[in-house]
Amino acid sequence: MASQAPVLILLGPPGAGKGTQARMLEEAFGLVQLSTGDLLRAAVAAGTEAGRAARAVMEAGQLVSDEIVLAILKDRMVQPDVARGVILDGFPRTDGQAAALDALLASAGQRITAAVSLEVDDEAMVGRVSGRYSCGTCGEGYHDQFKQPAQAGTCDKCGGTAMKRRADDTAETVRERLKAYHAQTAPLIAYYDGKGVLTRIDAMGPIAEVQDALAGIVGRVAA
Ligand code: ADP
Ligand code: AMP
Image 1 (cartoon, protein in one colour):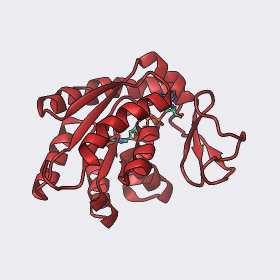
Image 2: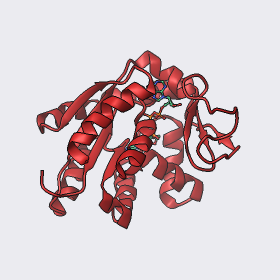
Image 3: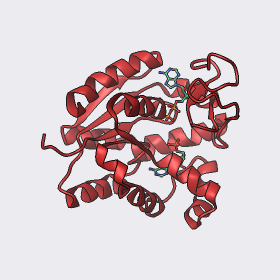
């Protein structure tokens, strides 16, 4: 591989563990997590034009238009920290986004380093998503059953006590999001397999096991 900074893609349905694992990879490998979900939620909170257009679509569990997502992603990709290498979390999610990413990287003489598909059962996803919450101060993710802070209500990372839940993390919405995933995003697994950059990992096990599997892959391509 040429000496470009790593560009890693985490694929998987809502609740697969993309955000959880991306944050760990950031710390372990000094990469930058780029979550289009986080960028869109920030746009909604800031009340920007893109945020106002995205809000209802996100709450309904559908995909925001490629036009809006690509605009916020491109804005983020020009920030200087991205030069360290990125973990794309929740992007691309459509054929159009995958093609746009290829074109964006090609224009900079780069390409995708690796894509990892976190493979999970749909049924487990409802429980993972509906038990999810995060620290309102630093964003660290938690789960009612699977990842509890050492002291209930207090973030292990920053000591913050304002925990929050996402408006779209309901059992009904997660079913819509899973439908969107299967219809529009799952085909990208074959797309990246065809490019020879795909690895599939079993993401049904505990967080630490998935982390070990991922760190092994990322360590080979990004260390
Ligand atoms: P995604 O970013 O793919 O939507 P998250 O990383 O936010 O998923 O994980 C969803 C929820 O499931 C979070 O509350 C997280 O703590 C929990 N979680 C993540 N990975 C696992 C795992 N391997 N086993 C059990 N729970 C997990
Ligand atoms: P996430 O945080 O990845 O679970 O995304 C939350 C919601 O944001 C999704 O259900 C979509 O409505 C929207 N979203 C995030 N990333 C994308 C994307 N790449 N393309 C379209 N919609 C997205």
